[in-house]
Picture 1 (tube, helix red, strand yellow):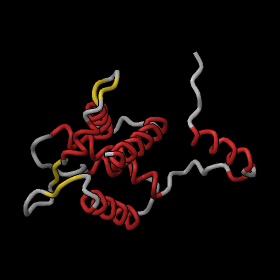
Picture 2 (picture 1 turned 90 degrees about the vertical axis):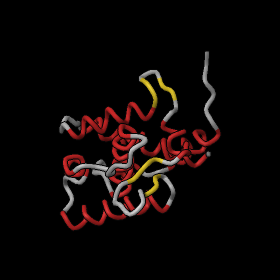
Picture 3 (picture 1 turned 30 degrees about the vertical axis):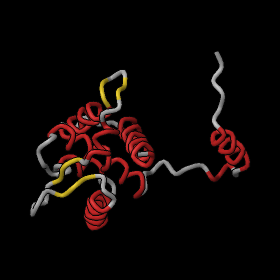
Length: 157
């Protein structure tokens, strides 16, 4: 059985075919990629503790995500990412604390069933892997894709 390409995939293919060869994406993760990684790991960390409020991350997770950028930029990234997640309604701040809880739309997306368990359970395992410092470059790339997937699903709700 053949799977038909979506309209967006057809247009993307046409655009990519017209790009010069030197327009290949830089393999070094930029701010957006690191944000997506932070988002995915934070969601896994919160999912593991639902319904109790918790911090988004621990230092070990952040050291892995922000490795390769200076401390000042890392601090800005973490602060802005945390603010964005709260302001965009991905998480709710616990009353008077610097702790967060997942809201209903985020829980709905994280409850998406997959062959490996729910998306939240997979991200919970990812967060544990980061906490244990057992990541690889391939895992980190794939975690960023899960962060992007979460945002596309959240945007539909």
